[in-house]
Image (cartoon, rainbow, N blue to C red; front, top):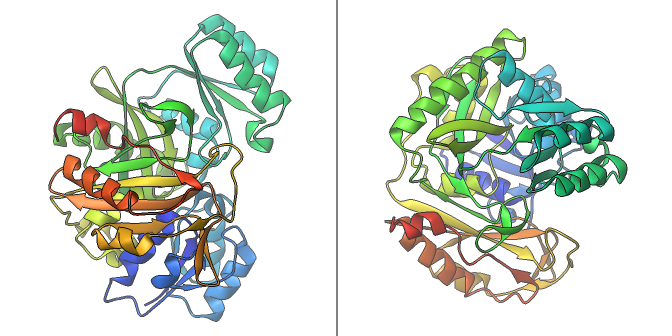
Length: 424
């Protein structure tokens, strides 16, 4: 098969790494790719949100399968355009992608189909949002409705913090059009988990669970990011809990989307809160998580390509996947200053030494320039390792991190801390 992966981050590197290993893959392209992806695929200088150019490339190159990594091209309708040209594409259509494109759309779906989630309100003015916050009190959660690159969510401990979040989104327009509407939710204490399932419009196939780390600092401190690390499996995601998530959240969503006229195909990523022992849905993403995808691909023992095709053509019902018993853990190396303003163009060395430890270094924001690897993004590298336990995978990942020479970057030093504390 001739395959095109869309995107240029760590998630897409992990996908290219897994797809390139498939005997079904004859030619692999990635648009736009990065310096690490270039080792596994031919990189094409087309932006991930350039829908017209991507469709032209796919048709001109007789691509058999397009795998869309990030959410933006999905919301922009890339899959719809490819379908119209007869090109098979992994991911939801634009209407179904609104599960991530609009938090209000997702919350209303939960309300219609009795999917457990936090109580909420939707607001189009700062005054109404603040009135609701004043009525409910803190702690409370303020979310922008639209896409905000993994940001735009404030867990406010006080009313004043919540008011500040409202002002930043609606008055200061920090998140642009994404903050034109706000979702105000009740605060749910508990443990966050990531649950993934492949969906073909009617059938959902659960994947391995994972747990990520959103906060920028050790001990889950500081502002939220796109993700500073992840590990799989997640000890709290027991088989019994997985069954409950499927029965109360995933399957009702699949049935509800079909009933509402938006049949869902692709990967469905449920961000969960384990609240008083019961799972509740925090948010849906319509693509693989980043960096959760990296640990999932490290543990997957089945050929990923047939699974992606089965999601596209509606044959997941008879499909199964095999997973390694080993754990996998990934540490994100980010540019100094992230998630705020950060410097670009700093040089990274020691990557061969890191690989020599047995870890796999997925690139997220890099370019190759005159034989040097330079950082171009906020999250730049995903250092990923396996082990017979999460504790051992953590030790191997950090051994590889310590082999990398990059004064311009930093990482959390406690990825996997919950599982390590439980001696997992």
